[in-house]
Image (cartoon, rainbow, N blue to C red; front, side, top):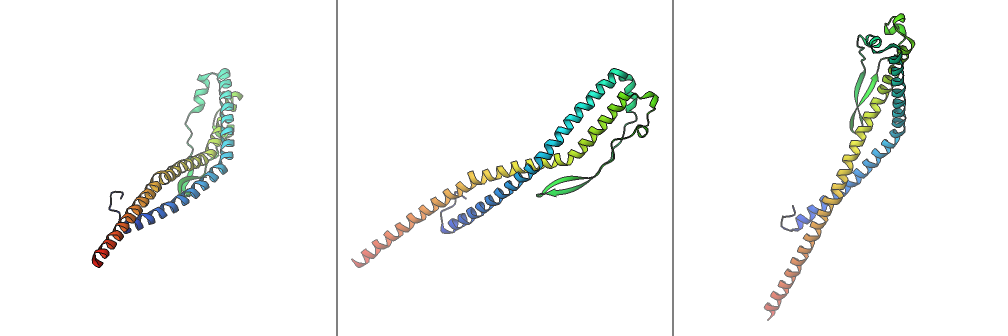
Length: 207
């Protein structure tokens, strides 16, 4: 477009495009502010969830080390058989036009000694405490997963919106403004030249 001949029609098109760019920048600014507000709204619960997960993981591994010290790895290994299958129900959702996933239903992770199906004589209190701690940790992870996904999507959308704003404000808009100014100067020079030529012709005709 910058290589096109400077004409009044081109000047009008550039002005209309600049107007659309400015409106787009305004909309993107408002979208970015909304995303920032949403992120701040989710920041505290997400930070609390991460702290709870970190604390739960620390307690779980402390219990695991204690169980290993008491029962040994050979005695604990059979307690993990068979592998447990956890099924969750999810559904797609949208937040600010972003595709996210809602966790609709999740199973009860924490179980009683009878539900685990282990013989009481083969399971000591340290092993039971370890299993309970890790089940609590899994429950915390399932609770935090949808919010973590939403936070990540919002962060990606905020980064993309900021890049779009910077591109429009620093490249597209200045380029159009420069094109409009150059075209206007060229048209003004042509108009002055035409005016001088017309005056010269009128003088010659009168002479």
